[in-house]
Length: 473
Ligand code: SF4
Ligand code: SF4
Image (tube, rainbow, N blue to C red; front, side):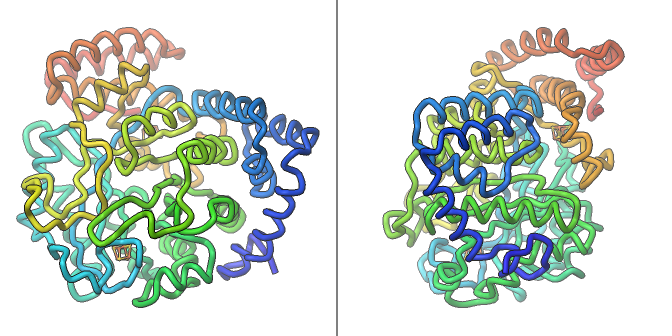
């Protein structure tokens, strides 16, 4: 029985409810009266239910899709403005005891290079990341209680935060590790992490069990209920995601929104972020082996619909996607992207050569440098942001959501984007990027509506030029 408030996976992600939702969406895919009323509701910018959003996903009318895209773009501007936050993944270890059939780190893969960073390796990696200009990382590790116990993750986080190379610093570490216990989540919270990210991969229980034939991740309920345990452990910013391509995308989309509704219903705080990865080629993995791959058009539609369904949630696109695809979905609601990512273990300090046995989790489709990505974003009219202010100012969980839902977070995001971009330009940018960035900052400072904030931002930018760092609203 479907119950958004239940703590049981099979009740808050009810298979029956998803199937009924999909049948309802099919029955109404050309019900333009209903579709118009749902789009009207979305214009209130308070979100949509999984049923409403699923009807829009089923609708194939070009005019309606155009309206959805325009609305997604507007909502993105109203909530987040034109800033795009940048981050990089940092792979700590690819030892893993699970058998996920879509990931080359699965235990049976004997030809991938298995690596685990020592604390000294981490210093090298983070120094390289700081030298690129990164301030925000997402750490990744396979599930392996012997090679990657929680103590290793905690020690690594401590090491990462401690490294201060030149003007560099990692100011926010998000964590993407396997589902774990409340006690371990509490330890992660105490270590000062930003968001805890865990992809569901698929919400379809039967497929989930087939795709995860062995290892602790096989347990659908334990995995699906992980965010509730994370919140019980005090982590109030959690990041959801499914791996599109594994199951029918309409099923996943409904499940994803139901998960968001569940978090909101039980904890009063929806997901901080939603990621939308698609299955990509990797060592041992051929995306064609999965029947449910989605086209770029469907992918764009999903992004736009997530934006209008959960306006308060950040949306992340990684370098799994090409420059072209990223460019297409940026205006549809994406708020965060990775840049210059290496998906191999130790790949920042020592990039792998083509003839080396790889340790990478997937092939990167966007191989540009961070400077190229920053430059590109600015040319597209965005402000590249290295902001990490919220959790450092205690704006997490419901405090963050209250500001975000009132569309006030923009008052912090915008000046913080300018100040952190200024730091980037001073410390790491190429000459051309610096020139474009300085002009952009001058223009955008004038767009700060509050005179006091504008004055303060001017002063901070001036002080950054004078050598000071780390200002925030
Ligand atoms: S997806 Fe995660 S748990 Fe599964 S094999 Fe890869 S690293 Fe391990
Ligand atoms: S102010 Fe908060 S929400 Fe805005 S970019 Fe910075 S950390 Fe993100």
